[in-house]
Length: 69
Figure 1: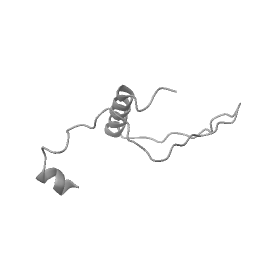
Figure 2: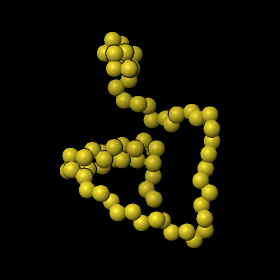
Figure 3: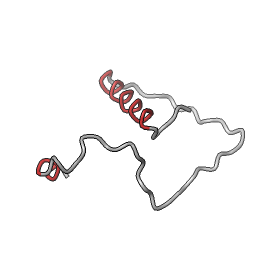
Figure 4: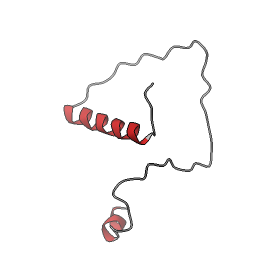
């Protein structure tokens, strides 16, 4: 893939479009009424990794791929 990106830079966009991909299978998750989330301790991240995570989450929020819970 990297070779194609280098060879044909004008063909691929710099950023992905803001539309979600078409999936052949639709699915959902059945929730149990009154169930509580399972606690899982977070693990430490380097400051650079944490900043990258926050930046990516912000971009996904802005594009509408995710929403606050």
